[in-house]
Image 1 (cartoon, rainbow, N blue to C red):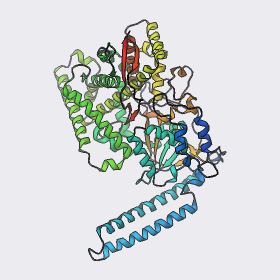
Image 2 (image 1 turned 180 degrees about the horizontal axis):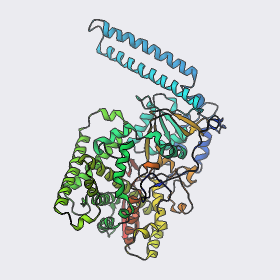
Image 3 (image 1 turned 45 degrees about the vertical axis):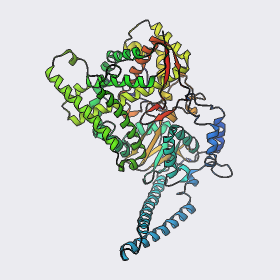
Length: 626
């Protein structure tokens, strides 16, 4: 099996959902929580030692722990002038009483001034104050109210933190409003180096730190600690939900019945509807995949002409997933109609918009976006028309042989679900099934174009199998090929970062104290953003060659929650085996037909992050027939 982990038993019997495990469950005994952790060397010292062996990232991106970049942040990491480490028990502006008193005094002065202006606004004659003065008064009052709310929230937080025996957590740049964090994140997204920035932040401020995203008053936790991820996704799964901000970002396209926009019983119902599509009988039927892969193989130039393999993979996945869902392929690799091509293009454009809305929150959601609405409306019309056409087809051809081939839409229609629910489920599978596979396949073949010896080993394994058309069992037993797939998923997880929101006060096992090893208190309403991409490249988890593409590591590597390409716990990706099978089959067919892959692009590879990651400039290669 391509990803062997412990089974998650919450789903119906007969379906293998794999849920990673990571050691023993975290202990929350009060006596353990109150232990005083040992102090560690200064952060700047640890950074200096860590950069000696890291080198550059092998995928062309800047090394995320490079010494030059760390020097830019040296003033942050240094903490105090004597070189001692940043200690959240003293550095936080809310814990430091003197700083808090000054801050409260300043806000009180602002509040009094603002109230004086407001009195003028409401009790003086019209025209005495200018519009600018009135606006300033209103803004100051709102800011004062926000700040007082923030101060009270911090007071409640520290009271509960002390009562629970937890330790304080580092605050990003000691900034209570999180404005530098927002500005840096926005610039990094625009420059296509968001993942590198996040890795630098986690290296400097610890594997778990907090910030706030103005104007929210709730905490935002940033982490890539496997113990914390296990707690969020599995051990205390019931304490966490999909954040409201993400739901609002997805709603216009996916609707309110998607597994990506629901929590609790609604999510359980949506997942139950999707589950039959991914049982072993459907996954092991390779015929649906194979016919589209063969079309892809025929379209690849044999004369050494360079082409964009990422674009080819995008066409392959839209054809195969639409065939699986609708019983009708878009046939972009063949003779697609203009409307089918437009659907793929506009769906992709809407996903980019969704990613910005989910990351930037209320700013993008309160501003009108007619272009986004246009994309969403067309996508909905396209799917609705396919649903109606399928209804008509089944009513006039109830006993056709086509009806005996599994089509996901047919199962939804037989269940009698409303059209709006059917559309939500179809688009959810389309989103998960298409972009995930395209992202990983593109990255995998980028690495293969740089590693001819890996291509040779896979081809030898295919030759030794001695079959032209492999079965599902034979495919999953190709050991080295599956190592290559797993290594591609490690270095380029299809969803590089994710988030959850706490629905009640809870605790995470790591991130507190001067060494970051003590438990931290998480108040209700806090959002935890966890980095899969950064975690799966950590040197302390994967060794000094963590940035290198080395499939052989999987011969002995045992992983748990430090390897989450498909998430983990009850919300583990329902279609992971579907995706893994498709990736392995594509690699099998292409390396069966071609013996060399050569990269034909002088530009360094740059990862572009939306919901999934992709290569900004595509994947330009040439391939030599076998």
